Image 1 (cartoon, each protein chain N blue to C red):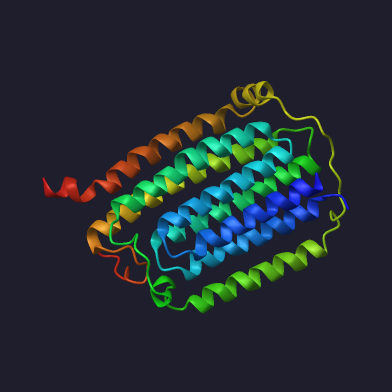
Image 2: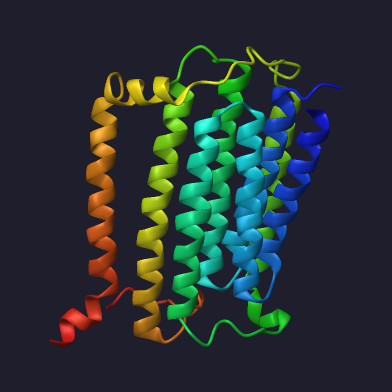
Length: 103
Length: 168
């Protein structure tokens, strides 16, 4: 049995579900960000799998993967800065305790 | 090829599951690094050499270290906690959503006509080609990404230092 595009799509869907589960059910804001990173990686894996199996001749998918990785890096920097700001304000990074939008 | 795929998939899935289930935050980050390594291995298997290097440099080298720094700066959270402390309220709703999404995606992929598609080609893209494309066809997105990263850098510093600035 050869590894087909299907296998990569399944793996990526499974990883996306794991990341979603972590982002939605954990209490710690840092773990929520880690779940979002896992979802990002699952999406980027899809880009690369489609590039390998279908659109090998053009570089578009690789470019999209590179830009997605850059955006994920910027997102995690902003997210962790927000976590630190929230921690300074509430003395905790429990997402259940962040109920107020007032600064 | 197949054996490498299954081994890397096992590493990736185990890393991801451990990263979101472990109690100790530092252990979570170490599992996340395992997950990133598995994904990097998949890129190598898919002949995307440059993305392999990018994945190792950016995710393991930058993002994981950034998360470790955030854990260091927010103390009182590195200790182990009881199971009730780890999960947020309505955690069952989150897990249910994840299971439903997984089932939906699985059903969609099963119906997919692309199912048995085999590799289109085996030669890997050279870094030279990617570099040329970045400064020719993709110049505007490339520059926009530079602006975005600068904005994110300044924004992160401003957000993290907000209270300090206000106190002065």
